[in-house]
Image (tube, rainbow, N blue to C red; front, side, top):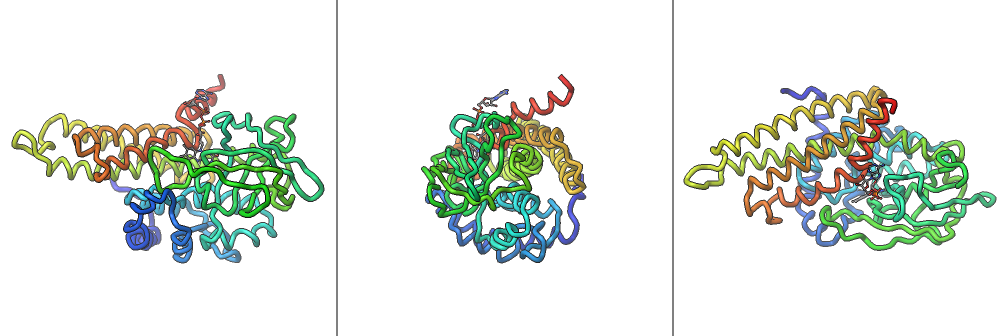
Length: 381
Ligand SMILES: Cc1cc2nc3c(=O)[nH]c(=O)nc-3n(C[C@H](O)[C@H](O)[C@H](O)COP(=O)(O)OP(=O)(O)OC[C@H]3O[C@@H](n4cnc5c(N)ncnc54)[C@H](O)[C@@H]3O)c2cc1C
């Protein structure tokens, strides 16, 4: 079925993004996988062609357009070339709402121009060694002292952890107040007492810097609190998680489509028993099933994008999109790898890289189990 999500302006933008990625990213990504990180320059270059912060008001350098279809175009194009090291979607899809919607004018002036130009790379620190799914169990604290908060604690698995200049840190400002005692503070590169740990070694996404962060009596100015008042952090996070989960779902469907396409081509060319492997009924049935499921997923996700644009995407809609599409993605890629035989296990074949890169999709942004909890709770149990 024809996709009807995009208008002409999105298609033009897609061409620009595709050309940029072919020129500035694809030729270098293998090297970045070896380096364990992408260079900051590729952020600035993306900023120069307007890839960041469409929703940022024009006076701060953005396009002033709130339309997630532009975000989706970037995600799809990045996934199409397997550039899993770029932390653009974390910056654009996850962090933009924090910096655009929760900042006052003074903060906007300080941070948004750099956000758009790619000179200020962003990250979010929710997860800690002792608390991931159970966010209320975090132990990082921020104690108000005059015009500052004194921040102590530790975060782990932070995307853009090494490259980031601005980290939105989730901390308890009133540990006795439960959900109402959590706040979001922006910690800046170079603040005394803020240090980064290891660039963590992962099974996939080798070019993505995922790191530990440490806060030892960091004096964060009160002017770096997000939102009008202390204690809103948990609700601010909950408000932004649907967009983060939708971004992951867009990634999932794009990755599944891409791998499916290359696998169909492979099955046409690979021969066994004197025939192409695509001529075996099993191959055709596997591909037919996967193609059907991916197309159905695509339409649900496109509908979610429209709902997000209309400010109608619910937490439950996004949870459904996230768990269903990411579980589908891992299934599709695994089955496609099987159809490649031994070559599927070789890193020189895109399906192998897609397989290791995809595994995290059912985990970060809220695990499949937590998504099902969210949906299940909506029945009123
Ligand atoms: C590559 C990568 C990048 C990441 N990037 C970021 C980032 O940028 N910022 C950030 O803050 N975090 C990030 N994370 C952390 C990620 O969001 C967490 O790993 C995730 O939320 C799960 O938390 P956990 O690892 O502590 O697992 P746990 O919470 O310990 O879960 C372990 C298992 O128990 C299950 N479980 C837990 N609670 C329940 C329950 N109530 N019911 C049923 N099952 C349950 C889980 O589903 C899971 O299977 C990243 C993680 C990875 C791997």
